Amino acid sequence: MSQPLYVIKIGGNVIDNPEACSRFLRSFAHIKGPKILVHGGGKIATQIAARLQIETRMVEGRRITDKPMLDVVTMVYGGLVNKNLVAQLQALGCNAIGLTGADGGIIRSVRRPVKTIDYGFVGDIEAVNGEQIHAILGSSLIPVIAPLTYSTSGDLLNTNADTMASVTGVAMSEFYEVNLIYCFEKKGVLSDPDDDTAVIAALNLDSYHFYKSTGVINKGMIPKLDNAFDALQAGISKVMICHADDLIEAIDSEAGTAITL
Amino acid sequence: MSQPLYVIKIGGNVIDNPEACSRFLRSFAHIKGPKILVHGGGKIATQIAARLQIETRMVEGRRITDKPMLDVVTMVYGGLVNKNLVAQLQALGCNAIGLTGADGGIIRSVRRPVKTIDYGFVGDIEAVNGEQIHAILGSSLIPVIAPLTYSTSGDLLNTNADTMASVTGVAMSEFYEVNLIYCFEKKGVLSDPDDDTAVIAALNLDSYHFYKSTGVINKGMIPKLDNAFDALQAGISKVMICHADDLIEAIDSEAGTAITL
Image 1 (cartoon, rainbow over the protein chains, first blue to last red):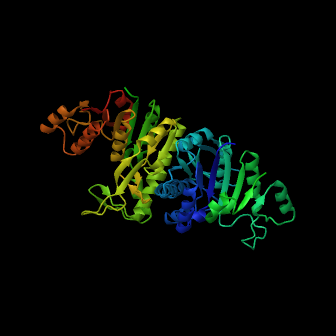
Image 2 (cartoon, chains in turn green, red):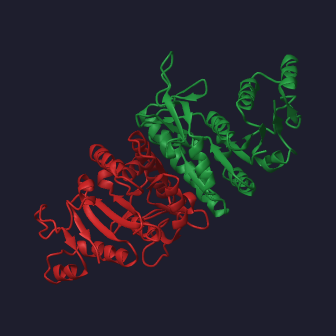
Image 3 (cartoon, chains in turn green, blue):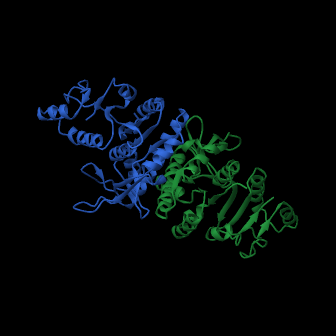
């Protein structure tokens, strides 16, 4: 059995709340062994854009990223958010290193082709350099990855953080037993969307199909879980979905939803 | 004789000019072997601050960095400038990795104590983790360092890029034969300030004292050269001062001013 690696995605709602973020970082710093943090953007980019009089346009929850907005997300995700996370982790004794996909060429993408919507400078991931990430982890560094990638033509590209976490986890499964953990604002996958305590502790393909067929697992959760099973089929050992406050408990299988094949 | 390492500082005036910057990056990418780029900030931080209605205050050429201004320089230096340099270098086949002093804990500082002026979140460098930078270089990565450091309390601190280049060079002289190159808008140290072609090709302590005593080397150049000789005395093999367009020629000793003890 190879060494475990935790790839942890933290959403924008935690980034936006300094106290919640600080609690999360203490938990993250507490995890032993190799680990990777992938962070979302949060609302700060939208706020900074508004102050710079740059209009934010969203289509189906995705940000349209023209050149002025690309500069904003590069500043906010790659600079303000990423470097503050790194400095806070360093103060907690965690040897963090802030990266975008461009740094070390770790995650390369192509600009999304225009079909009906022009998303602008948005990247669809093409390649993850697992060897390079492995070498960085081998230098006892803890990657903190911002949701930006790059193209071979030298452009930065705004990229979905959930996808970055999952493709990074898959690439690292060549070297480690990868646990991919999505931290969000709910305690896990719920059997009753109105009851925050009704957490399904474990899901596999069989029970997932059963919960779907009986309508227990609701529509919004289905693409997230389909992605989780795709990641498992591509080599990740376990996917966990938990509240950001429950990270340590989720790793100890005492909170959240554990998803396996 | 240990392996050569080039530590190259590029000033804000080159960063501010896309064509000059692109020419410089092509030269930088062309240099064989281990190398480190340290970049200044340029005028973009001042422009972004103005658009965010944050006042820029300078005292003796140094930026007063209150919390809103710290956020601006973190966004601009650590995000916009740094990540665009990295993405452009990657497109040139140079495996760049963008870092602040916080990343990997490579350069730690203390917040400058308030005497007559409160500079705010400005760092005076305390420690350089040469082992960590050596490990990063050992992974075939090319560090691109933004002028930000961090304190043990988890704050980011605005830090002078010239100083960061020089302390990094000194720390790396334990592992390499370090050449520290300052690229700026003049062709080197001039024997006649009104004649841009009157470059002094070589300076050592003796000739420096001679040029100073005869008044040939002008006042503004003295602190820069004093720092260069300090760096040489602390272990750096050679300091070069050249125009950003002449980087390759300077390395081949065909341009700029070469400074040795």
